[in-house]
Length: 323
Ligand SMILES: [Zn+2]
Image 1 (spheres, helix red, strand yellow):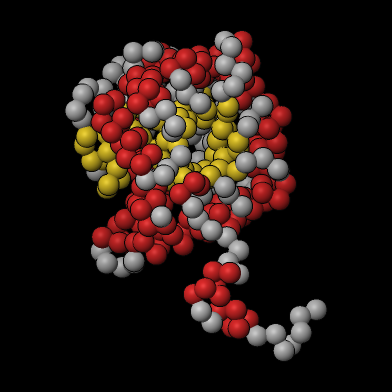
Image 2 (cartoon, rainbow, N blue to C red):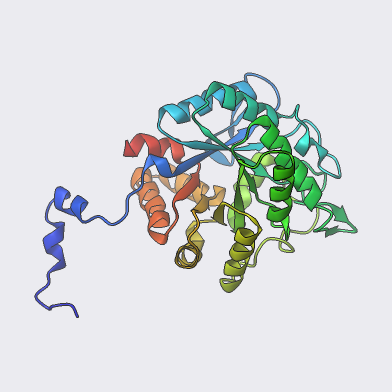
């Protein structure tokens, strides 16, 4: 029982005193920076829906990766826009496409950086869905070998870690098996284990041109009302071979993050998604909030909830602020 003579303010008297009793810290080592790769060379174009973020050709992505590394950021996650789309999404495993080329180039030019690759089909399919489609239905088991092919192509290009974001059932097991068969036993899997069908992804879809042609993603991404189901999703992915589990989005799902932290002793990541970023940037641009303080407080809350890794568009700014 707390003694009523206890005065909490005693431990808040000076900056040093507060630092001594601080329970959670945000460090540059927690951050992964997403990169959007497009075809061409010399391309660095700001993404209208994500101010301060860019569509980058491979050469410019290497420069950005160098900058991230110089700031102390440990990893980048690669997303891409291919030169062609088809029904199957076959550009997703084409070694000549921007993603595979960027992975190769970054591994060569910035060897210390951890290279994570997003594994999905929605940027590559003509339907904009995360799997094969038949009669307006996204098929699960038919999609798994395609995702496995994508993951193996990223591993061949040199990715340290693949990150399946599609939410098909059984995809972590399919990817693990394919990686192992191809000899990539050391390539790890960070699964988007609990990925909700969230409105917070809006700006990202503009960034990668992946809005679905029909319907929505609620048939495979999670219902935002569900908490217990998230624990089942995470448990499944761990049993299938995930090395790191991720919860996406971050900010509106910190209860899920805390529950995952309490239930599973695996490294936990969150994706601080495009809508979260865009809200802060818009409010800051209008002078309504102090951007630095809001961002640091928001990301710290993700750490406090139990995440270790934060995938965030703020990574380079935060790296400058917390050094
Ligand atoms: Zn997708």
